[in-house]
Length: 351
Picture 1: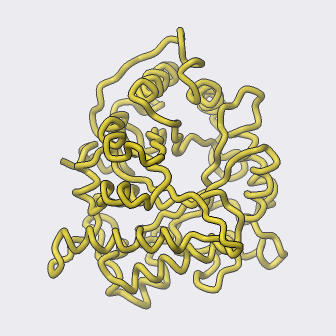
Picture 2: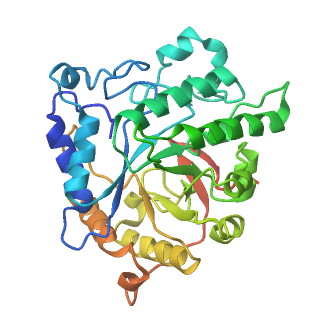
Picture 3: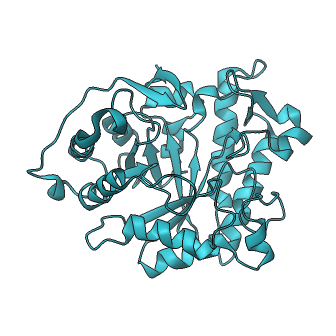
């Protein structure tokens, strides 16, 4: 959600298309939708903190709240519903320009080494408080089952703080997550689940300033969503640090920022077999569920409709949710190469 090109579309139609695609078919194994509305620098809802994204201003003027529609339509289908925050990104999703808060507070961000935007520096207490205020607003005003902090998407470029060092960055992000634990509460006092999207292995998490062992020991999260642009996830390592903690592990597969060499345009009909191999491998390693990221086709905006890819995704949604539905189906088991991110090739692990 939150992509450009939908400002002239009815909000109910946008949500209906997504819910129908994800969970509309009879045998769909999708049981949870995590709605992402952008980079957390503009709001699709009435906010006292964030400016409203230009894509959604007309909807709000007409009294239409797309976030509430997402919740209501997901619940009608019996689906769990999360709100996803891209917690670190300092760009305006869709335009890739600096958001107003970083223009007003330039010291809150550090320059990206390649692209013309900034990332938020969580070593600063003002940054942490600002982000917590945004998250609390959603948690208090909407009836979500959970909230996801997507800490992985831009994590290779977390700012290194020369004064505080790596440990200072660790402590800053930990402080944010610690405050999350007390901050994600409904007005009625009911807690919502907390998920964190992190790198695919523990070493990479440390490199990016994420003290995942400490989070697990203090039960600051309920779900770890693991990895992004690759097929290799250290489920065994994360299971070791979450033992007896009742923390779920959801390995992720991204079909937009793909593992290098396995793009749909290259392998076409073999893609479903590759996915079966990856999902089966994840289940064998002890995953609690599958996290499908960028498994979408936008029929409601200007993106060309790809029927072949649409059908493949629908098939994956019927198969990936259980090792039993993957049995006796053709599979391809692959060796991880590199992750691909917006044309920028980087190593898939952060060791």
